[in-house]
Length: 196
Ligand code: GRF
Image 1 (cartoon, rainbow, N blue to C red):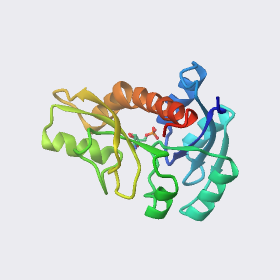
Image 2: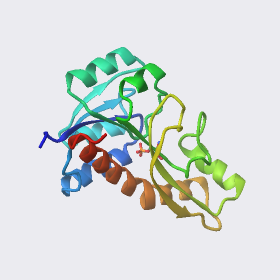
Image 3: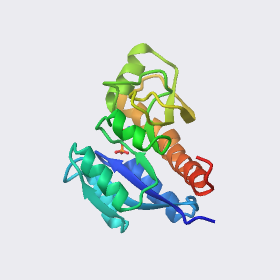
Image 4: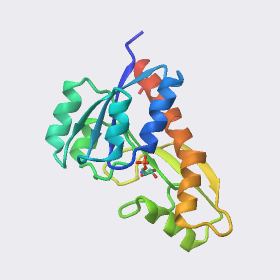
């Protein structure tokens, strides 16, 4: 069989989803993939420290898709995971990695998604609307923000008295940190077996 799928994770913030991937790999729950590179959109973000501590190579690329593409090619990356990455990728970029970029979004798409819905704003919108169920979605990335094919979803209950912070935390714990490693393995296996 082909070697493990080489994965790059793109990050912009605290990196708890990256941590979930690192922990899953350590537990042997990513048998078909290998976390090879973490790319931050700026210096000093905590996600880069998490990567460094886990012994994963890191880089910083600020809004320079040419450099980003070169870097991914240099490192032989086959699967790109957006884990709290706040830069919107161009159509040219997403085409060049068609069906090989996934993103985690903290709502049940098509609710509370698209341009401007990121971080706490997603949960604020969900609470404002008054939904009783929210959750997370892992989807393929194309040129439409949060618009690519859905791979996995998990629902999470909204509770009486929730604030954007408490809802965000529950969605992360109950959905995001579980779904993203599962999706990473699903895609890694498919790419390794030549099915994706
Ligand atoms: C998560 O809620 C993720 O769904 C969203 O951005 C947040 C990133 O958090 N895309 P972290 O950096 O993984 O802690």
